[in-house]
Image (tube, rainbow, N blue to C red):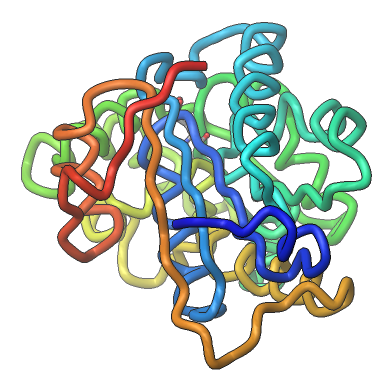
Amino acid sequence: MQHDGLGDMHNPSLLPVALFDSGMGGLTVLKALAKCLPAEDMIYLGDTARLPYGTKGRDTIIRYTLKAAGKLVDMGVKMLVVACNTATAAALPTIRDHFAPLPVLGVVEPGAMAAASASRNGQIVVIATEATIAGGAYQQAIARIRPEARVLGRACTLFVPLAEEGWMKGPIVEGIARRYLKHIFTPPVTALRPDTLLLGCTHFPLLLHALQRVVGPHVRIIDSAATTAQCVKEELTWRALLRDAGHSGISRFLTTDNCARFARTGSLFLGRPLKPDEVDLIDL
Ligand code: DGL
């Protein structure tokens, strides 16, 4: 994707939207965004060399996220979407301060909004990485929107490598999911059963089918991709930064390690073939 520097300076709406994740999970957000805003160009960066972020300390996550965001911002973008819950939970305020006035959107608030409105009985389970759960970002975000909701957080660390490996279903995936979740969704008869499972990690939508089998058909499984895409659209509209509808959006993919692997597994997340020559290797 070539940008005419001068033209872009005079018309920032022509610049791409940047998305960032520790790996390929954020591609689930890119997919939703491309559907919602087909005219927008996008640059996606997956920091696969440093994945996983979810088991790392807060300061490390902030440092990595600042580095990655800086790289994207230097390329000339009109908006940054932190398409990683772990990075959003740890680093969103820092990123916003650092790159102001660039609009920066995370995935936690949109995910919390989606779950808070989907749940009928207010019993919500959020699954995410260790860092996201420990920081309590989802619990706090849902409490702001729906104070009476009861939110239970559960770290599901092994789901990230399963998704990155492209293991989406089958007895091993379901066995691990059962170990993490079964007791939560089969409470004693006196207790209220959770009716909503919020996927608080952008890698987890890949495991949707297996998760639904484990928690049962009556539980609504929600992720932040579609709501985030809607929030991006609103923000770009409000700032008059939407691209002309006549344009056909192009996506460019960057990774910090192994383009061939990114293309192979990324195809599963995107739901369309991704060729290795669509992916560029960068260093942070
Ligand atoms: N995709 C990231 C998220 O949404 C987590 C993956 C990781 O642990 O790096 O939290």
